[in-house]
Length: 332
Image (cartoon, rainbow, N blue to C red):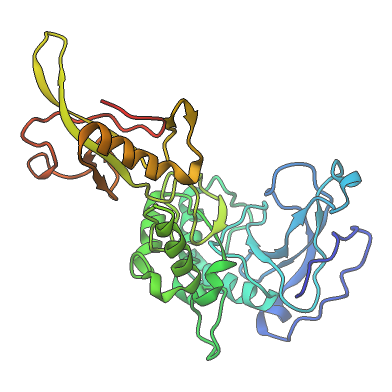
């Protein structure tokens, strides 16, 4: 397995990498470059200015040695083989949805991006604050024809690559939605082995995982980089468990009510906290013991009310009374 070398010193010449003689490589000019992302002090490095005005470069990170962690970030030295290559604007902001595994692929993607811009170039005086221009460039990088991974036939796809392809959250929701539409909506789980495994494991654990590749909009800020199948608590759909019954309102009248919680919400049995993995069964026992029945819903819910479902179609629609969604405990 190929591993990344320690970050290079800027005084070292970058002569360890000899790219194939593509047209983009011949036209690129090696220049001094410092990225805006990640934040923090950085040692100057090198980038390859493309004919379209964008810059292709490797990443920056802290040195691996713990005693040097307080030193400025340093560039990863380019080398033969697969490593992370980014596409950035001249002022250092990443402008592509994906990072690439070779300089050649990154340069080809940069050419596709700039071809969609006015006059086919990124203006020298443009910056990240030129929102319309930045969104147009980022939008051009999101299509399936620009995926970093290739199958055995040379066609671009997700395949096993979804386990290690990084994806950058688009700058706006409209670009995010267009990206999903370009890839045919939520990608079927069976089309991605890593997604299929993640979903299968999540369902065994009592979750309802999203079967597509996309992190939920709003769960992470624009520019956030993660795997295409995000398994964080905000991007996985949690199962609601609950029951219906009756209660007394403030005027002493008996009215319908409901109780609900997430299957992994905190719960106690015999005065002790239930371990995380056992909480779904504890909630099941609690509902059956106290209410005699259990209602479960894998859709996003407020209490037992599915969010986005019309009033006359929703559970408890005859009463209009529902609990309040909470992930910390039951609600009535």
